[in-house]
Image (tube, rainbow, N blue to C red; front, side):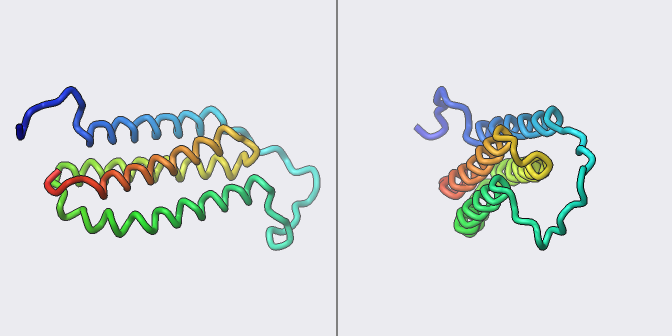
Length: 144
């Protein structure tokens, strides 16, 4: 029966709640884990000569993997965007913007503390949530 309510909340509400959790976790982690930079004991090696740490290399690889997935999902999402209701489109766009800001904040924290495994895992989870939101939004039925 069209319009019958099930016991589940609307999809956009679940996406909004997930984005809010990601944003709160990212901001909390960035705030709690922010540490002042220790003074350098020796002169730093210029960036062109210094090799990236294994953690930063892993970060770059993770970002490349998620970047490829995002590049595949974005055109699908754009194709479906015109078929979404204006309300759904607004919720999806707002949640993607929240996730994007969380990714920027977490990336900045990881750059300052690349050995922090919790930040790396939070970044990984946030990338997964972004890809999941894009995949689900691209699969929404017309008019949703």
